Every structure is written in structure tokens, then in C-alpha cells.
Image (cartoon, rainbow, N blue to C red; front, side, top):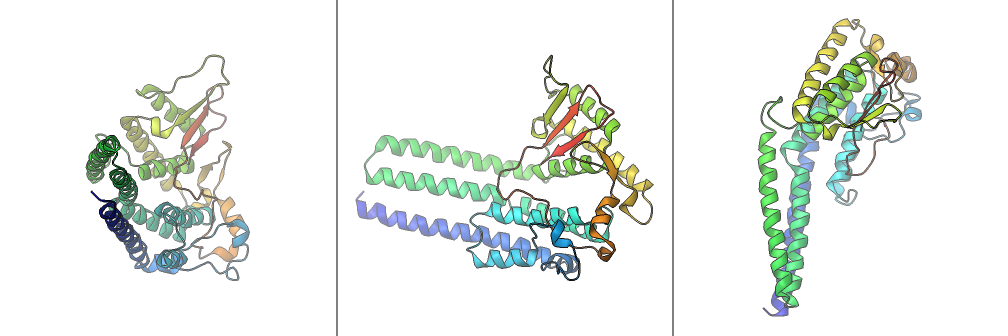
Length: 334
């Protein structure tokens, strides 16, 4: 084929690529717009928190986010370079809520509900897989057209094989997406979001003794980590390395603990609930109330927990000191 013909096809492919990305961005816009249709979500997360209403808020919250500003940034089509920056901003909005409002608080409940809705819609739209698939498809097709222009048959054959492999991968991912619609439990893999929620539940509800039992469940499973002789007694577990059946056993165990803790909570809310900190110390959740002050009786929607602004999920890990299993524990970390 002549060079002009290849160049014309390149221009057509660039237009198609831009149009496809625009459709993906429109899907993202619809997700945010759907969230803001909920009155509670719009009221507490639809605009920046007013510092004059909640003194001290911005001393705690260093990276505030709100859905109204996120939607404006999204509509501008220039603020976010990729969908991961958008996703992380939305997640940060709700992580901030968890930081500022203690568990059991009404606003915390609104935030957790909105967060769950976002994650469900994000997964249903299959946003990340479609974004990555389109980027790879466009790159490979442009490589092929360039190989045609330079009359490089071996390169064309190589790219064709990669395109075929990509097509097979996309089809497999579509099958995995269908598996997400199966009911949760043994028989299917845990999704990334389900693992993230399990990690948070462990952080919020599991004490040192219970963490010891949790570790036993992991060590009894087929994905038990190897321990080194002569080491410091600390075992580090990557949640992504735990087999699916063991993860669901852990989920059932932690759900039971959370339900028992909820039954013991006074009607006033989260003050009596125990937490497990990143250093392994246990304490009362009312430390959050002390930070927010009496002025926070109504709660606040947006704030910051220093969540990373990149599209790579940090490893979630459990660290256990086998030498002193009852002295403390560290939670799964994101």
C-alpha cells in the first residue's frame, strides 16, 4: 500500500481512539452524576467542606476532595490525565470521610454507602479493563500501520500476533467480569474491592487474639507463607497471595466479629468500639471524636487520609509477630 493510504488510515485510527476514550470518560461522568442523585451524597459530599462551619477540619484533612469539584474537573476534560487519577480522587473523598467521622456516625454511614455504590458501578462499567485494552489496541495498531509504511513483513506478523493475544485477553477479562455477578463466597475469586473492604474490616474490628486465629487460618491453607529459620518471628502476608477459599473463610470470621462488636456498641455509636492501629496498639474509636470536637455533631463528608494518587494498588499485607502473638497486631495495609 502507498504511504498516503497508510497515513490516512493512521489519521482515522487516531480519531477512533479519541472517540473511544471520550466514550469511556462519559461513562465515568455518568457514574459521578449517578452518585450525586442521592440526596445524602449530594448534601455531604457534593461540595467542599466549609472550614468556618467545622473549625480544625483542614488541620486534620490535608488533601480534601468532594464529588462536586471532581465532576467539574472531569467535565473540563483537561484535569485528569487518565481514569486512575479520577478513581483515586473519588476514593480519597470517602477515605477522608472515614478518617474524620468515627464508625457508626451517620455521615460515616452515608460515606460508606456512597463508596460502595461507586465501587459497584465502577466494576460494572469495567472501566479500567476497557481503558487499558483501548490503549494497548491503539498502540499495536499504530505500530502495524508504521510497519506497513516501511514494508516490514516480519514486524507486521509480530504485531498481528500481539493483536490476537490482546483480543483473547479482552475476551477472558469479559468472562471474569461476568464472574463478578456471581454471589460472593467460595467458588469465585475475591475482587480487588472485596479485598480492600476485608482489609478495612480487619483494621477496624480484629484484636490481637483474633488476629492470631486469623493467621492460623492462613497458615492452614494452601497459600501459607514460608517462615525463615532464625528470623525475627515476623510473618508478612500479601493479601493477593492468599487463596480464594481461605479469603472467604477469613471474610466469614471477620464478619462474625464485626457483628458481635456492633451488638455490643452503645446506642450512642462508635465511642466504645475498639480499633487496631498500624503500630499494633489498641484504642477507643472516640479518639476520632476528640479530634473533630463537639462542633462536629453533624459530621463532615470530605477529608484526607493521605491516599496515594496513582493507579497502582499498594500491596495489602498482614504482619504478625509469632513470638508474641497476644501483644499486638498490625492490620492489612493498602
